[in-house]
Image (cartoon, rainbow, N blue to C red):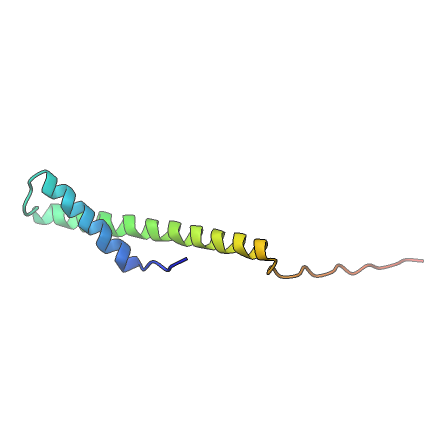
Length: 82
């Protein structure tokens, strides 16, 4: 699975938000609105990144189990009492 950089996600989210503003015919948002959009875009992109990481780990684990490349479990010591 291809790695996804946090910056790529952030740029994509910001682009989508700017397109949404364009649909509402807002050419340039106020400073408060722009600051809020930046904050929301950062939080949203970090959550997306964490979800992508989870899915990547899950996929890798499934592939390892399917190919049989998991670590061997340690054998338990057995003590025989007379």
